Each structure stands twice: as C-alpha cells, then as structure tokens.
Length: 109
Image 1 (cartoon, one colour):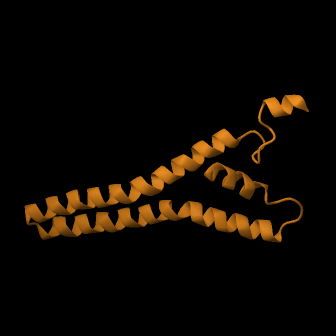
Image 2 (image 1 turned 120 degrees about the vertical axis):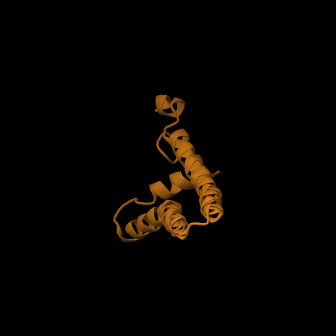
Image 3 (image 1 turned 90 degrees about the vertical axis):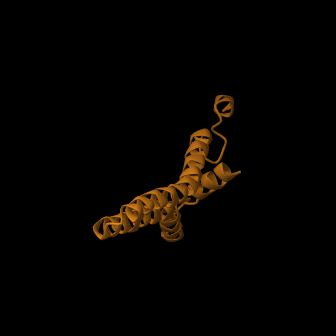
C-alpha cells in the first residue's frame, strides 16, 4: 500500500492527475486561442477581399469566414458537450461513475 502512495495513486485520477492537468490546460488554451485566431484570420481575409474590390473574392472570403466560425464553435463546444454526456451517463449508471468528475475537478484546481 505504501508503494501506491509513493506513485500518487491516492489522487482522484488514480495517478493520472498530472496528465489530466495538462489536458485541461491545453483545452483552456484552445478555448482562448481559437476565437482570437478566428477574428485575426477573418480580418485579414475580408481586408484582402475588400482591397481587391472583387465581388467574387468578397463572397469567397465571407464563405471562408462562416466556415471558420462553424469550425471554431464546434471545437469550442466539444468539451462542454462531452461533460454533459458524461453527466447524463453518470446519472443513469450503476456503481461509482462519478470518479471522472472528481478527477476533472481536481485538475481544475
């Protein structure tokens, strides 16, 4: 039993807390950088299209901006959807299904 304590198996994640913290930090960074990148690339694309004064190019840039917005929204909401699905599964499951939530909450701290 003392060897489990040495390897950190007593945390909520069964010893995987450092890895879960890295994943949580990566997701948080993505949720900040994706909207910023969307704004920057949208400004660049639409700015080029407006400067060129070509209606076809403006429509293409607008289409790209809409597609990027959809992709960014999907990436932004995937963690929220996964958490919601996991809560639904945990509510309907048998046994100890809240271990993932305790692990995720420990990674947030």
